[in-house]
Amino acid sequence: MHCITCDKNKYPLCSNCSRNPYFVEKARRVLAQKNGLKSLKQLYSEKYAEIKNYNTNSFWNIKFSSPVSYANEPSVTKERIKIAASYIPKKTKRLLDIGTGVGLIEEYLGSQGKTYEIYGIDISQKSVNILKKKFKGDFRKGSVYSLPYGKNSFDVVLALEVLEHISPSKILKVLGKVNEILKPGGVFICSVPLNERMWGLTVNESSHLREYSPELLEKELIISGFRPAGKSFIYAFPDHYVLKSFIARNILTKRWDFNDLILSAKKI
Image: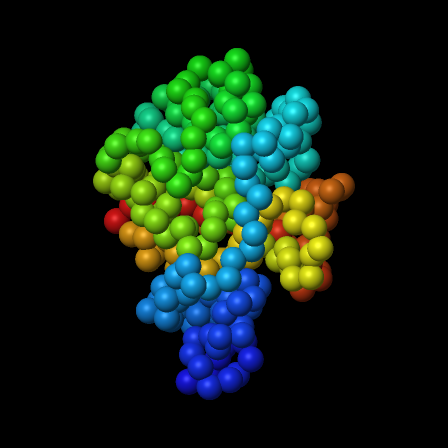
């Protein structure tokens, strides 16, 4: 069998392609689409190249330096949050939000009269300070790589626009921990950007470390002990969002690619 990206006689990746993080990520997407789980799992070894990680406390403190509210967010963000909130089961009591940011979904849930017992964790101390002032809940500074929660702690775990910031060599461990802290039958709700086309970017302003496809996210969840349940796609039109989304979904169906995926999965 040949290298997935250059067709040399080495599978799944030759030594040259293994040193290019974009080739490695492409190989993951290909294997996920082919349902090659055994070979796919091999590509999460630390020996494969990864995009440089700039996700630090100071990086995100700068990102969260300006006041933000749900009402002032672009339509795509509001749509993502509404869909994610719709996936939260009615019987939910305890909810953890990983990468809480400035609490946009917490703000939305509050506006809808939801009274969950909310926990949140974020790498940014500035974010945590904002959250503690705005919301009732347990908010703390911490790393997604060492979540400080015990087994079977939560009915729902959220990770909206977070997984793309996690190094591929660590993502399966993180997802495994999420599975562990969920109660039996608990729900994991996540979202990731799609079709970013990061190849060739000279500056990685968002510090994204992954290029997800729907199949790749689903396979990572399956490997980590989840069963994908709900799935929604949205566009990122900056203006006339409702009209353009309608046209893209119903009329010019091949004109635009989706820009974001929201997915829910149940703990098996």
